[in-house]
Length: 138
Length: 138
Length: 138
Image (cartoon, rainbow over all chains, first blue to last red; front, side):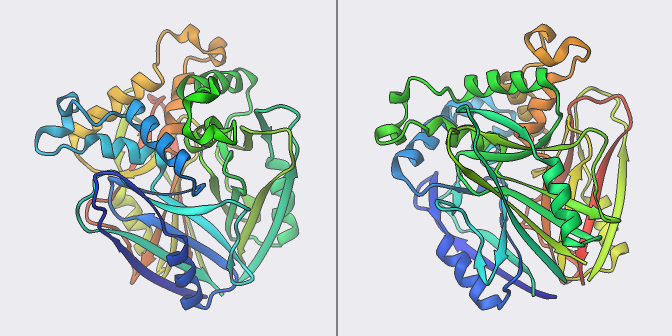
């Protein structure tokens, strides 16, 4: 069994951002030499997500509006977590979007449907944060 | 390490549908010959889900009502994604229900609790769409 | 390939509870002898979750309030599932929080970011329920 590990670093300029990281994950897969197996991609921070969806700007603005409706950032005082922090909403938003994705590797490629792309979802940005890519297989 | 891959195809007659795919996944597992390992089952489309829950009709109607409350289909104009599409709500619904499940394989069987069943959740149906089953192990 | 399986049992005294199970999962990992691989941790019941987030009491009370807003327990009669049951809300809450997490194993440790902790989320407690830990790797 082969095993591969890499951290991807991000520093979003805004509090919230959706970043397509598919090319970086594909590069990890090439580096790993794995042709059959599984790729785990997970946020290493609990106010960020990794998820799979469409790379379409309209949809991304729909996500922003929708997450703000389901788990609004403000007023900060509505959350018990926000005594020393202001990021309780980011913990909730990440819960909806998910921590991780697992992608099959077949024939040396990410085994994707037609529109699947991997995103890093930042909900408490303006600082350096990490995503873990772990690949196992043969 | 053994590795197995199969696509399951669906063509829901309605826009939304929940389909129990546990028997098909069990058949894949038998075909794979894997007795210890992991089964990844994921939607290959970004307006559909694979999730685990109860096969109970009342609960399924609760899911329909609840998802329509959290991410309503109409009016279509409420979503920026819907300039050429009408399926923004399906992207959001799938986000809540999840893209994938990972199931342990122990002693040649899906290692399930008493009521766990695997469902394909269709949120933008009336066309042919796919689920990927990827199994690795020994 | 090594493979390891263990069930963790819980009996929450209250209907809802969030329990940090990171130490038990770490103990499973030590017992398994796996140093490179993957750990799957999943609820075996469909009214419970396993998820990763922060071990902070304020945040946990925010989760409770937020889940009650998105999927209220009462009135029980609002859910079709509640003809013989009263736990439809628990199925919905678990859907938001997620069934499972997959954690990378690197150098014999759970490959975690600074604040990641694994929780069992109970939404229909006061009875014995199980979590599955499945580890594969080398």
